Amino acid sequence: MDRNVLHRFFAGTASFEEEEAVCDWVDASDKNREELIRERKYFDVLLLHKTKNSSMVQSGHRFSLPFVIRESLKIAAAISVLVVSALYIYNNVAKPAPVLAMNKLVVPPGQRANLTLSDGTNVWLNACSEMTYPASFSEDTRRVSLKGEAYFDVSKDVEHPFVVQTKKCDIKVLGTEFNVRVNESELDCEFSAALLEGSIELINKMKPGPSIRLAPMPKAEWTGGKMMVESIRNLDDYRWKEGLICFENIRFADLMKRFEKTYDIRIVIQNKSLHDYKCSGKCRVSDGVDFILQVLQRSTRFTFSRSDDNTIIYIK
Image 1 (cartoon, helix red, strand yellow):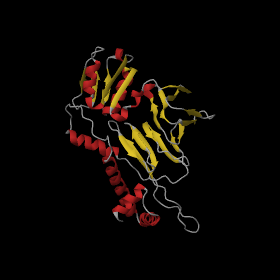
Image 2 (spheres, rainbow, N blue to C red):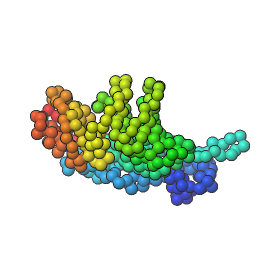
Image 3 (tube, one colour):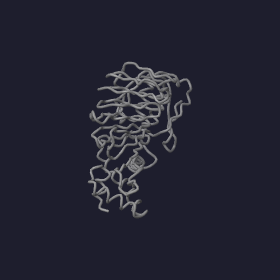
Image 4 (cartoon, rainbow, N blue to C red):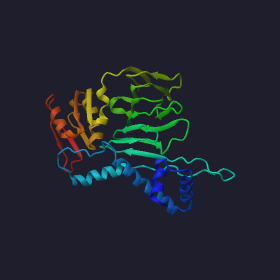
């Protein structure tokens, strides 16, 4: 099968005849199906290569593996894009229904990803996040599923609402900018949606009832079995997509968990008195975790060291 045809198929720009040809080709043999999956992975490597901010994080400190090799392995791990369904479903008269190809993008610790969906919606995914989305939106409602944290700049389309599905809540929008965080246990918050532009509607899946409609600049959080709505106090909380780490009045232990995700490293706090110490500050991801810890040492007393293989930081 011609590579250009397959790439148009993945991008959702193939003609009906090309889609039909690809599906017939995939149905023909397991070998063809394996080739489709290999080509899908290659296609998404090219996609992430064009990402604005997918450059590797450097801390300027020694590593147990050569830096380039280690970071290459990270990027390879990030390309966990799966073709969930790329086949036609035939009815009794063998007439094919529209094809529906679903992708899953998994972002491991230490990485961020930025992609544009087929409708023009721009999405940033934070570390330890995953999103399932169609190669091309073909239904009345544009649906994606999210675990972790993402920032959405949704392309407006009144006739085709955009829905972000999460375990706790579904978020329905027409065209807006908002940040979603799911299962952030270090912040004692299982779900958070912050609206920066437009409007969104929250549908609570844990306690069915009237939906919650938000106007610009509030945030809704599911904490302790309740949904709370309040004003956004600090926009810096949503600048992670710019490569910034911003924190205000956060527990030291929770901040270290955030560093673990950001820098793909384990942090062991041996000084128990530090756990509840409250921290505030702002830094660049590119500053590196060692430099940030040195800055934190100016406000509270502790020492830190790395393990021999550089995979663990001990804080004493």
